Image 1: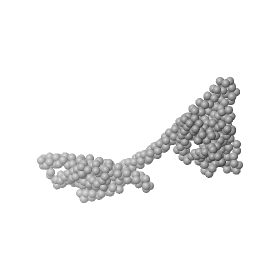
Image 2 (image 1 turned 120 degrees about the vertical axis):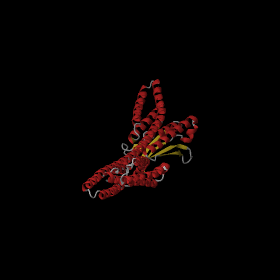
Image 3 (image 1 turned 90 degrees about the vertical axis):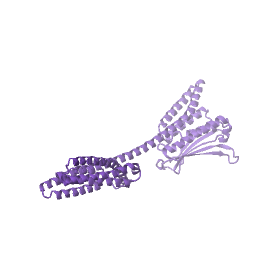
Image 4 (image 1 turned 45 degrees about the vertical axis):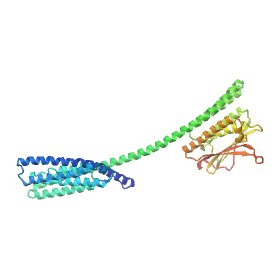
Length: 454
């Protein structure tokens, strides 16, 4: 038999598991055969007693055959041992199990081969030899070497007996020798094929289990990713209603005040923004150019709504290919919204200014939102309850979004917030938010040394 188990560490581990599985199976068969041997002893002794009373023991062969039946009585030893220590053998003592199987096969060899020899003397027939060959080849699942050794030894024992007993009858000697080989070789080959098929089945089952484990881990990772994406979409949905309500309310006011041109212009920008948001929300990552289009439309709507009370500057490094660089969608909008609502809208003196600057810094993409509003300390003092609640909710949502983006895309994004102050008076002059997003090196185009472009 070709060895179905290769010599790789995994295959060697499988071989050990396969041999243990066969050991347990052979132990179950040994338990059955042991009690069957004990039963066979009582049946044969009953038959011998009947023959004795009918005075049928007329030859030495029959007397020897009757005495050989006592070998079956020894089957009670493995039968009792297995029955009393069955669970212990299966759980712990592999060597004990092998010893019991060896004892069973030894008793089988002595009893059945002895009966074959005595039957040959008495009736010129190998009565129990086929039973023995079938049991050690097809009933017990033994490794090829052990099974081959048993077959060779049995052929030597029985063949030697045939040679001695039938030496004077050459024709019968040849017939019995052919019978021995004709029965043993096909049964051995069939058992060898059975053993190989069982080994291949075992390997296929292990491979299938391994594939199922890989598929299960893959499905688990995919499930976790999908859950994170759904959570991310839910967080986006928490922000959109607030903004949508304000925009729709502004359109309503323009219509009520008969400002149809402003309402139409506002509605046109709003529809374009909604279209971009819907398109971007379908993807985990969007191009920087698409994100900036949506952000620009959002800021223009807010400028329009607040009567153009602040300026907006967008600066992007020419080292970046904005059509190629990918970032999480709507990552800037919450900070821009905070800057407008909590910094610029409460500014009393001077014109408001909002700037967004994007450029590479090391291995990160640096997104910077800066305003010259009243600062975070003053924002908490102006309508503290509503402002603080809205701001804390907005910042928490954004923080959760960045954490989820890190989980989904295996990044290490972070946010830093800095309060700007006048160096002389230390009074608040605005807020700067810096977002650091890891970006692969091939997404940065270093074809130009120009700093920024509008």
